[in-house]
Length: 225
Image 1 (cartoon, rainbow, N blue to C red):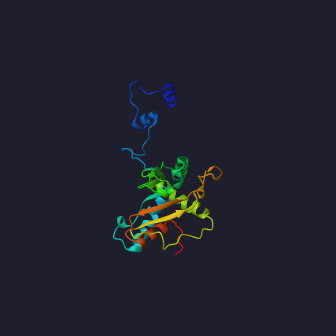
Image 2 (image 1 turned 90 degrees about the vertical axis):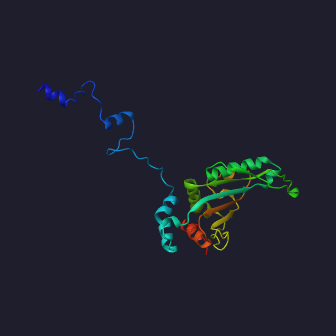
Image 3 (image 1 turned 120 degrees about the vertical axis):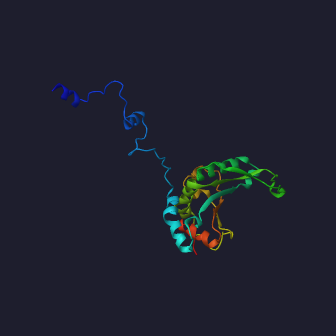
């Protein structure tokens, strides 16, 4: 009876006994694999539009344009956002404010852009900082695009869509301009020093405007034609 009682009571293992792999992992706080074998690193969760491209857009475009393999399907490579701040020539604090705005909008620290040549009429010296820009790639790029199409563009005053016959450069890239940074929810209208616009360039691997437009339209950019 005493032997049975000890067993049921969870008698400690004999001194010197090594814990099994799962027990040791649990004690160390490590991941305990469901089955024997090396642990596999799990990639971070994809952005919504990044997953949409992989699951829906790429297969649909491969079928529409008869690409021989998925690797030929155009993809969004980067998004470049540029703010020109002409008043920075007289007041560099204006540029500091633009940098702060673009940081909040993009989630990434911008770089300052400089005048390539002097413009006497605007009192701009060669090499003077007159703007800022940021280049977004991968998940951050898709997250910005998602906020642009679902939140920012619908907040543009009198917005009726993007003209589908303008903005393409013939090499698969598309540019659009926004007049007000306050359409982005990250910007507090009551705290901005000035309303300023920006240019947004979508750089794709598409070889034609038709392919680029199909790609961007699949991401819900609201082209009118």
